[in-house]
Image (cartoon, rainbow, N blue to C red; front, side, top):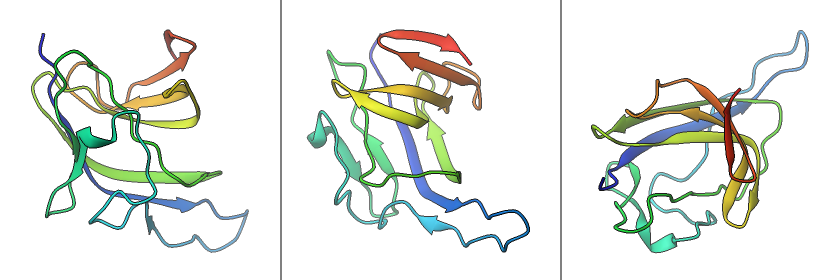
Length: 130
């Protein structure tokens, strides 16, 4: 079928504190206005709306698009808001590396095709529940 959107906003992260230390504050993962520094195999497909919502346009022949942060995150928590269309497919990859513009690593699902919060692992074209 025709691919549909998943929308994200208020993407924030924070480093986990050392044992007994104070918890750091949440930090925005992007500036809320642009995708400056971020990269994508199809960069023209991604946009930031006036309200700070990040989304990818549906693609006719390519059902997959990824957006890569310029930052390296280790030992962190992530928080985001998302909305999905009826058949939307989205998620957040972590502990991942880009291989031929596709992440190898873990993905927390955020969409309507799979249960939100379900954890999957992608490795060289193969998907497995984690």
